[in-house]
Length: 187
Image (tube, rainbow, N blue to C red; front, top):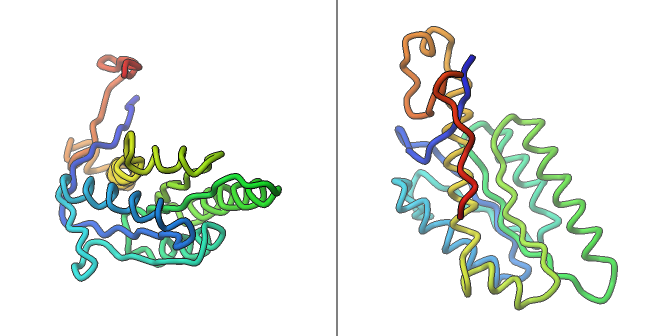
């Protein structure tokens, strides 16, 4: 029995897509900057004029799942990263949008088999969103890291069995039952 874990190594020139909401762009542009920084530091060229990352700007978070699903269905991308911010207001609008975006992204990933990273901040206040978009830390970095790991893991899972038996999996870690230990939970 084997345990598969993705790594953050980039082999070849995988392509990524990033879908960004223009609504709450004060937040989403900061998330995008963190995302691009992480990709750059892990060997992916995030230049919009380059060939490794495509960008799609949508009006709001509600529109993200449709575009993410289309991009994933194209099979051009190793992973799709969704960036948005839904901030609670005085009406139930927040609950409807947050729930539908979450369901839509999950459905798109399941239907296409392509990793689609949920990078939608759902916060009670603008201050909380700002903290997550760079004041304290930048979640955009984490979202890109998740995309790298999932792209690597899916690639490893899809390799032919003959490559697995020859120990030729390019960068995912294969852990046997004997060498497995639970992940560390320390921060």
